[in-house]
Image: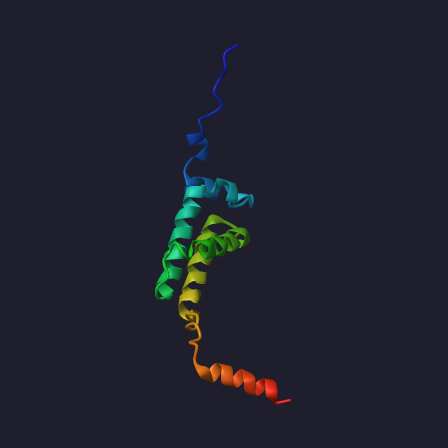
Length: 121
């Protein structure tokens, strides 16, 4: 019994663009997207997110970027749609982003306000 190889995995992966075009109509385009391609996108998103926040690194934004990318990946109807949505969402984030407020300093005024609220019954 000769063991015949069932197609090389490299050929199966094929050209991402061709695969995307072929699967765009079937709705199962996600299977054709390589994980490495998505990782690239996630890294790009993390970079953008990190650039918006002073002191943030893309590593610190990686989890957020993964969730961001995954939600778009699930919503998109094709690879082209995915790319479009990703770009659009990132632009929106860049426009509307407000860095988180600085941590409250331990100023006495804060505790004054809380004690005043407590006694104002």
